[in-house]
Length: 419
Image 1: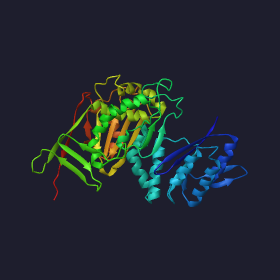
Image 2: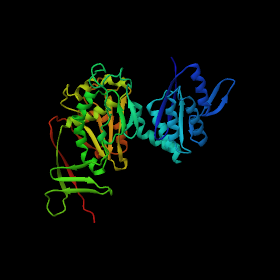
Image 3: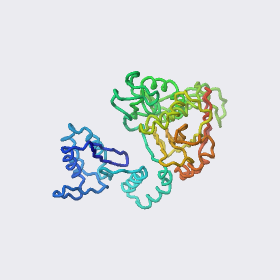
């Protein structure tokens, strides 16, 4: 059995259209590619296509008509129609039939598209991109996921599905509930893991994920990030409350303070959280979004997520506030090492929520020779990564999340009075 693959890339999205190749389908594919053709040789049945394309009214109409004609027999074509219809008039995009591409090539395409669509210097933009991202993408494959998009990850046939976290299949557990790959309370709208059973979903939702949500609770309330149910969250602690008004103003009330303007407040919540649960939830997100081929290497990590395997010391987590990266939707990038260099970690997560960036090592991978629990263990990774090239390491806050004891969650808040 052979397949035809069409890779499409725009600034906002990418699609991989994969169709089983048969004689009838091959004729349709030739017609499809003709819409993007630069030159067509009907005698040789060859179509020359430029990778860089521009969306036009004619192209959009032709693709729409093509999809309407054949989507009943080839439902995958609906993805093509969705991709083209989402492009703006005149927007440039890339198309690659049956092409194998590495992560760094895909990232370079996105960078080039940004330059082309914004009228920037392409070579200068490319040189800057390679200076910042060349090293890490030369050593790692990157997978990116956004809570703004809608995607179902894993096996969709419930008769074949197996839970990534407990290993059970549909003969012993149910897969009836929608399992969000990233907690819905953090603003994830459509990123769903098909391979998380109802029991694990309930355990995580009432367990480790609640600790991570509590960790972000001040940011959720401050920015008014809507989660499950759509209502803007409010946070009320023992000595404070915070909510974002409909006007956009943030109301922060302090209970029990004097009349003088406070410079610093220790905000005591009613929540008790485990530091390791915060880390477990981040790694649970990684397991939820990974291609199934990567899951076996994380067997020990999954046992730790499920509290079956104890880990006394974890790698440090790096945290930074980057206001210009603010988003109301969470996002997760996962870097998977593509070589045998065990001086750098096998898998690294970059989780973004509101204006917070968290960088963490996925622990206990079978492909790691050390725990990366010491700061010096991360020196080589940090030096090659884009994190060090867009700002000094000193700008990052280092979090040690080794404790598994439930402790009261507190926030230290500094105030600056401006006239």
